Image (tube, rainbow, N blue to C red; front, top):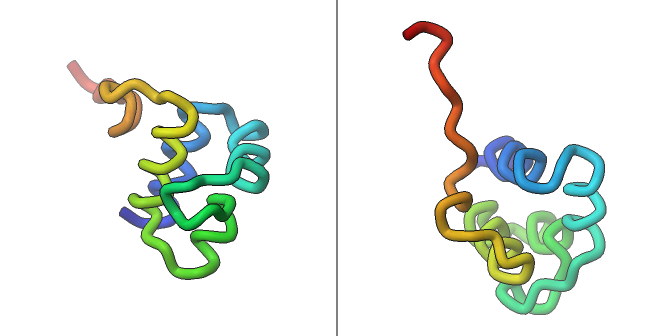
Length: 74
């Protein structure tokens, strides 16, 4: 997973404004008691950070891969 994927998932789940708040302030035990922003800056994989956010925020398993995007064509 790339950092752009992490932000897309965060924005889809929490909204573009609140996702920045969550990433910058929520302490995540799954990444060493750091915020998501701190963990990403320290080199933790975006996937591991995303899953840690999901665990703390109780994101259901069916939404952990992101929302389904319908194709433009039928």
